Length: 134
Image (cartoon, rainbow, N blue to C red):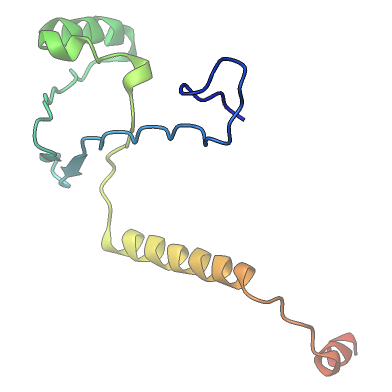
């Protein structure tokens, strides 16, 4: 029970708790990578996007390349370039038609298994069970 603001202190009413405010819609971003490395970035209105390419250097120079990258970012982008703000990663490796077909087949199989798991549990056929034992 929650005290009502219209009653005297110490009085308890059956008022429901206040509902939480709905969260505002999140901006959306879609990045499409072509096999040749060309990027297309699609975003909700009002989203700022800055694409930067990391220098290709050896392991001994990675920290210097990261420092240069940070220096060349716009001021607003430096404020979000922190590990806590990283929302997704993906390695570009060139996806073939056969790999995508296999992925879709695997996904369909998983969906079927999930659907079977949600359905009624089939009872074993005693005749088939007896035949298997022979």
